[in-house]
Image (tube, rainbow, N blue to C red):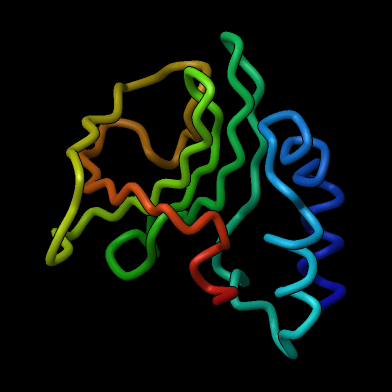
Amino acid sequence: MNELLDIWERAGVAQACEKIGLDFERIFASPASECSTNPYRDHGWLVVEQEGFTVINAIIEDAEQDRLFWEEWYLHEGEIHHHVLSLWRPPAYDELFSAPAHDEIHPQQCFSKQWYVIEDPDMAPLLLR
């Protein structure tokens, strides 16, 4: 899947994976190479480095948030996290995240909304499984 790999290259996803301890080739690139179309065509990829954090985001625009989810990967206190976040209540979730009106670490598309958070132990992007 050259399109997705190109998007990740421009966003700096491989370098961010290295910083937080994820195997980019195994978790992202290898599964993406098996796709004939880009399953993340409705997501934007954003790497944010602030306040001692490196966060990889697969974020959707406001108009798609009622049907699509946001994913994020980051390292916190020595543990890598993969969150799947949605505005709708899934059958099971781990916490609620009330996004602030603004900060330096989250993508602007998430601000001022309440998100249901699933702590996903599988680090692979959801749409590449």
